[in-house]
Image (cartoon, rainbow, N blue to C red; front, side, top):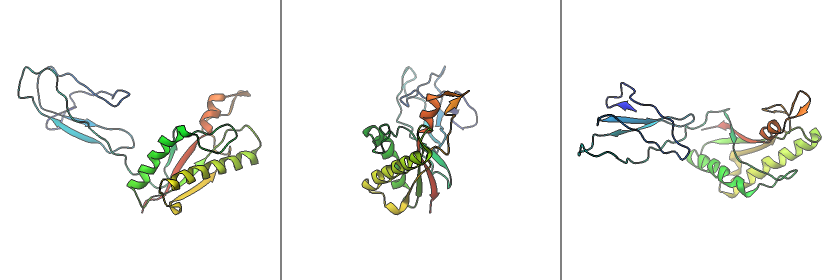
Amino acid sequence: MLDEAGNRKVFTKALTADGSYSFTLEDHMPVKVQAEANGFKSNAVNVPVPADAEVETLSYPDLCLEPEMPKVDEVIVIENVYYDFNKSVLKEESYASLDNVVALLNKYPAMTIELLSHTDNIGPDDYNMRLSEARAQSVVKYLTEKGIAPERLVGKGYGETNPVEPNEVDGKDNPEGRAKNRRTEFKVLKTE
């Protein structure tokens, strides 16, 4: 929250899990509420002094943030994309996250992306490569079924070649690390 001129911070607070915010001021004063988040364009709304000085609670409209267009070569993990063990068919729980990718691609119709699928290190290297390739193609299939032109999508499996966490720690299995390595990402290839 900034003073009305936007020159001085009056108050800073993180949003709640549901995205709501509230604040308390000692005195009524006109302020500007500004929201910022990584990967989003910032937005602000002026909050005027209420006409009735005795009013203690005011409600204001939502302060929406729009996602920034990802940059070329930026890699973004698509959270909550799930498959059954040793399968490449998308689970229904994945649809909401993939629908966000559809919305992004619809918002930026010139964008082309590569879908990168990864596995952990359980199983032979060549099997993991084939499994990750099949999973990447499942995502491509889902996106094309939602109306995204196939020429805007490149699906590629990377198997276990690009872990983000160790699959083992001190020679012992690391289930949390392996879970993070089983992921689907997208990389922006072009935006125009």
